[in-house]
Length: 290
Image 1 (cartoon, rainbow, N blue to C red):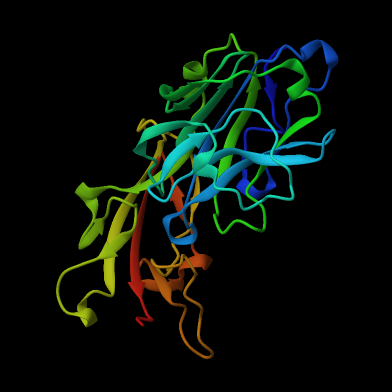
Image 2: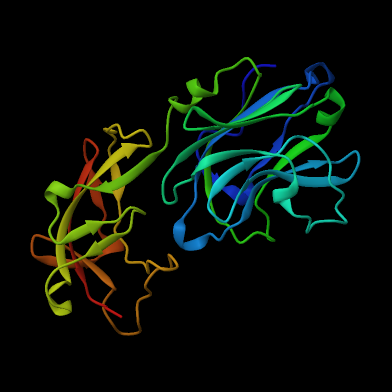
């Protein structure tokens, strides 16, 4: 079995992720790997949650495949069947491989799942974080599919670069291959801006009335921290940190966030900034503070 790239290498919702593990009888060797980049927003996810479900259409069964505990530790389950009539069974009681560290939120993380005939391994950012001896037969992979979080899960997330690999492929090689991008505040060129460990940007210093105007530079890097010299347009928006919702424009009022060019103010969504060599500058004003 060769590398199977799912759709394109763009970004998509976790809830839209659907994978058919094996398509041809010749591939049923009891082994496969799947890897992808995962981004979980802190403001719109609750835990514990199932990230991926496994489903076998032949025997009409569904079970967790990849999940996060209440402490945001990643768990990988072996290929097996749990009847749909028992959806509330305690996932922690099912044998699994588990990471010993917390999976970060608001940050791209590379996840790899290796399933062989006698062992399962969980990879995070190219390193083995958990493993467990478990038998996987060729019959258990027939008509096996993996599905992202569904409407019964409160977790929100995004994925990129989903690939199904032959077991002999190195998941670590795919960790460094074409990682996703993310914008960061340039701390050396920002006035009165702080970025916390979860990626939330906060205007600080002085009285509330004085915190409405600020400037900052943003830089584009990949998930490995390397600069990305890409040219595109970026738009600043004002959102609530607790739930990620956009601050809406009130009737007959200014836009909640304004940007300034040559002394003239525009609604931030009407005037994007150009990202040149991976960097863009903003002069902003918060017109609505709640």
